Structure formats: C-alpha cells, structure tokens
Image (cartoon, rainbow, N blue to C red):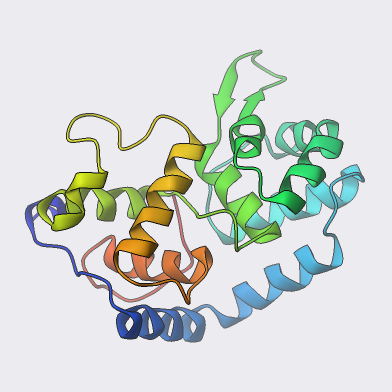
Length: 203
C-alpha cells in the first residue's frame, strides 16, 4: 500500500520524544560525528572547512550530490551572506545555497534537500529539514484536520520560507512547541515510510 493511501500517525509530544530516542539510538555515531564537525567549523569563510562539511553531510545523510566541490565553492563564495543569515535564521538563504552551477556541464542544479540539511546543522532551531520522507508524510496529512494548511493540489509550498511557515503551523497545531525543528524532523523521518527500522536520513 502506498503511504499516501493510509492514514498518517498523528504526532503527540510522547510520539515525538519516542521517535527522537529511537533515531538517536540508531544513529548515535553519525549524529555525533556531524555535531563535532559543525561545532568545530561553524563559519563558512574558509573553503577547506566548507568542503569538509559538504562531503561529510553528503555522505552520511546520503544527499546524492556528485559535484561536491562546486557546492562547497558556491557556499564559500556566499559565505558572508550565509553566515549572517544562518546566525539570524533567515530562511531565504536555503534557496540561495540550493541553486548551484555545475562546472563540468554549465547546467544549474537545485540541491534543495541538501541545503535544508546544511542549514539545519548550523541552526536547528530555525531550519526544518525537507527530504522525500518529510514530503511523503506531509502529503499524507491531507487526510487529517491539518489539511487546511496544505495546498490541495500540486506542490505543498513554492519556496523554503513557505515550508518554514508550514512546519511552524504543524508544530503549533499539534502542540509541539517544546521541540525544535530537528526533533520534529526525527518524527517525520520515522513516519514518512512504512516502519522498517531507522537509518540516517536520505533524500
């Protein structure tokens, strides 16, 4: 059965806490490695440090970026804007980070999921993660009373600031104000597919 054809698990504080516990137990080494890395290099004004963060996040969160150098160089070039925005929680920076020109082809690519995860690892209170599991879960919410917050047709949102608003509405609607976006993402990750064990997030 497709997940969109079944009723979603409606969040409660206890269910979110349980999802966080299970996720952390299953992914302790990965989460600690990324925590250490991003805490050690919080800024993006040194290209080698940015490259380390991009490579590690891409590999450990399986974001499927092949042109990692182009992505790292892009973030480094925007470092002044990136660091200022991340410190203040400005959502528009996600879309700027996501859009990259690939050197070998000259084509533009939008690494949306990666950009949300990269920003989240710098500021988990301000940047909810989007990936395919989150998308599937939110689409399944069209069958619930939360549907009034969702576009009934097409995309659930058109840009990252709209997604932040949607996730803020989600948190408020279900009384999850004691959780940050990262913790809520662990619940969405757990319930964005049929239960089959936990693993580090992928697109």
